[in-house]
Image 1 (cartoon, helix red, strand yellow):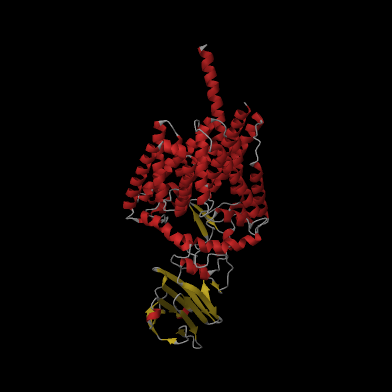
Image 2 (image 1 turned 120 degrees about the horizontal axis):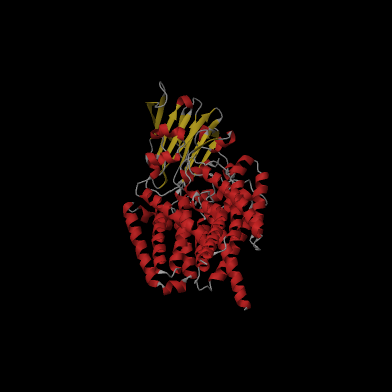
Length: 621
């Protein structure tokens, strides 16, 4: 009898391990891939150099190998899923396959029809979210819907995510207080190839100080990540009844809150704010019932914020207050750029600001003269200095002898026919810097790699005088929207956005960033990103998918008692994905975070299908 029980227990254990085996690629993708940081030196194709501010190589730490392991994980997941189907032949029947399939179809079509197929297939440097990566997201979502069924399945995947997030949060909090692993010798050795270990002390990885970027490359992506995890952990904290587990979820929420704040991502803060609103609306009865616990964690949040704000010399509070300034700017009351226009007419350069106009004219003797709005000549003085970059050459520092133009600073380099302009009052104390080349036919503006361009009118939709909205997103969105005219059916190709954005809008860039050397490689909006890269139809498919999931979830969880793991995890996932989708109005899809969204969406859909089936059966009895 004892032997029989042991044998039965052993068989159950083996069966459980086999079930987990199918889930390992999903667990790997949601927990390990965010941690992958390793240097990859990539030789850029010649046409990409026009859109790259660095050298001929892309030194990528954060994205390339994440992309590689996403593809590897997906291939393994497909193989295991096929084995699963052959053994069980258990494919769920659901509407969600339709939008997933439509989205996948237009990803493929947009890639095949793209002018830049090499980028469309593998992705743009530093991003690597091409066709293969996007299809991996959809495939892994499809597989997750079908494989995650039982409580143990859910615990295995969600447990993997929470352990991963815990470690990532600790790493990020250390970064916030100046203890960055990747700024230490041992940390650099972990992420550098063997051949670079001998010169590790000469490498400046240029990771930001006192900012949480964790292993996700950009603090904005930490904002997207924590908008998911912070919202999810809050949902667990409210819904879990067991005191020990509630305490653990509370501690985890505090860690996520600290990481959320430390990223200083206003997009993440906005996303988390909307997720919290949904949490209060959806779970208000439970919140009222558990008010002591809610007040307790709010007090803890205040303490954590106070400590972090003190450590940052008040910068965190200023960051939150800046959301108010963004709102003012959105409604036309905020600080706008003083620069209104720059025009070039042959050998005449006109700079128009809020208060004055300055004309710079190249005379027949190649000397420069300056005139005000009324056409009156402005006296100037030249001071010669040795050229710091070339021996036996000199530069001219030009000062305008008119107080109205005291914020203009010119440097003229005669042997290069180069005119450098700095303007002090672009907005606030922000300085604008730009180079012009004096050619035989007139002025040209200098862009990246010292390429010369004529100034051209660029089409834009909306956001006039609001270019600086949301850290320059007003400028980016207004120049991105016209691209939609040619992307209704298929887009320009996955991750090809930077190749079609009007990078030659130098006046817009100067108004917004104070420089012509900025490359815009992403729209800072997931929905614009999808519509431009893979087409408006693919965006409609994506929206159909997430909106259907959202309303299905609201219908289920509005009347739930939350007395089982499916309802607790399902509602928490809904709140988490709401945070991500709201953050997505200001952030893009990225290989560091997107797999977590898609896998949680798959789990959420699977749970909803199970709960709906259970509710339908209850109605029939």
